[in-house]
Length: 203
Image (cartoon, rainbow, N blue to C red; front, side, top):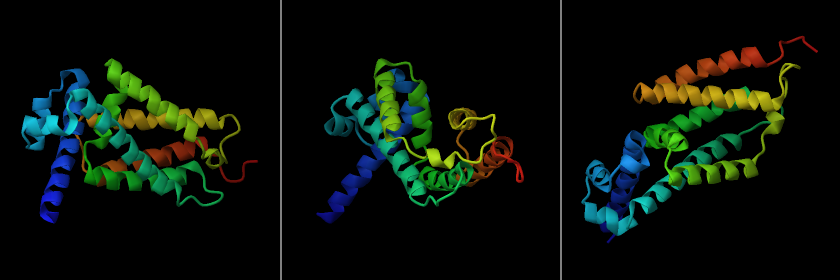
């Protein structure tokens, strides 16, 4: 019984990871259940047994990806120390996120692709995900020590744009080894810190 349950869990995890990969490569409209079944090494009938429709599967893996990334970020935030600035938190976050990347290599590719997918379903889910993220909020106290001519809102937006651009560029060139991604992204965090934070001695 336990072996059968373990096999079922493994099969479902293969389906989720295969769906992330196929949807990331082809988008919601062009990806097929057959593509996903082949990538997951399961029969198409198994796929329909679990999810019934492609839309149900997409919704499931969309929120699974969102939850996985949110859990990784929450783990990093839980280690926040009083007085810590955003760049220290970013270094810790990228470490946690790369552990997720090692376990689920297509989770970020899928999330990035979903954010720019033109399908009505993907736009709907992305709007809902953004709304949830805004309601969560928090972390404003980390945007301290910035240069006087840069507001926390501007810094947050700049960091978001840089992070999205970095991820998009790397995904377009093919998935990289997690440690290489971490090392290169950390270099960009160092550059942003030098540009945005007040220099020591500045009032």
